Amino acid sequence: MVGARPQFVKLAPVATALASQAQHVIVHTGQHYDDAMSDVFFRDLGIPAPDHNLEIGSGSHGAQTGRMLEALEAAFVDHQPDWVLVYGDTNSTVAAALAAVKLHLPLAHLEAGLRSFNRRMPEEHNRVLTDHAADLLLAPTDVAMDHLANEGLGHRAVLVGDVMTDVLLGVRDNVLRSQTPAPIDLEAGSYLVATLHRPDNTDDPSRLREIIHTLAQSDTPVVLLAHPRLLSLAAQHGITLAQGAIEVRDPLPYPQLVAAVMASRGVVTDSGGLQKEAFLLRVPATTIRPETEWVETVDLGWNVLANDVDAILPAISRPTPVPTDATPYGDGHAAQRVAEALLEAAA
Ligand code: UD1
Image (cartoon, rainbow, N blue to C red):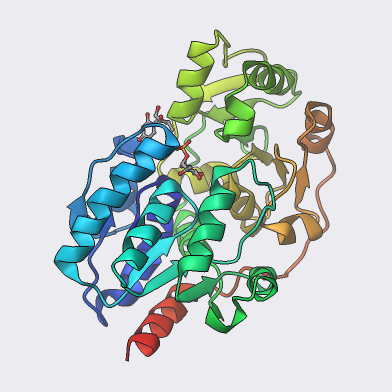
């Protein structure tokens, strides 16, 4: 079960790993529906088309999650799966978790055990509720395993590694092999890639205005890959995104995003995935959040948290971090372990 952009990326290697071993039915809630937010990921990453698209679309959290719950229940009743596999921490994740457990269907949560301990984030509630409902917790890191143990869930947890790493390493190698040009018309190493979509950064007009005003003053061009949520909120609040150093672009398909980050001088983001992708590509990241679930990126020096707007410019112009060959996110074969854990537990 998937619904939002980061989940399509995680689905890709799992669909490949399951293809020859199980009947894998893909249900898409339709939380993300624009071609650039959804279909392009299926095409580029070779993911089979969803068997069902529930076409739920956008809405307030309660309405969106409620509509998904109802539609997912009907889909699960039809299929009676041996496992319902949910990914990450979006509203689609928690809706599918609830639908599954109410039907007594075994539930597996991929990317279990991540915690920000920030209860203002909708994702924190989604992931905590999903972990506590699930029968099998597929954790990406040792830190995630520790969180699950601390919450009394260690006996249901398996360390599989990070499936996004599987995809990223493959895409990176393709970019290098095919010499895919970065889709940014700026010299390599001369620009920053930025994304911004968290409610805490976008929903309060004065906060959003301050962040944009700060990024606009960067010495380095900032290529802002604008999520539809950011565009609509900026328009609503009369905030001009394209000011100063900021160049606004559409969100990129995954291979182009990876190529753009590889050729960049750094990343400025509030996305969970992009911080980690930057680390894996050894590009410095600055994260506009008070905390991160991917603490390893910070501990290893490749990610700096800059929630206070005054901390953003010093962070993006900091010296290059110390090289590391640490692999906290696994070896790029997490999806195979996910398939094994599911098949073993179903046997
Ligand atoms: C969702 C997830 C977030 C994840 C992000 C990745 C939740 C609570 N949040 O946030 O964890 O990091 O996806 O992108 O589930 N919109 C479009 N086209 C689309 C999708 C959305 O225009 O295809 C616009 C709509 O105006 C919508 C807004 O974006 O209201 C927000 O979309 P939504 O899916 O509710 O949340 P995201 O901010 O994308």
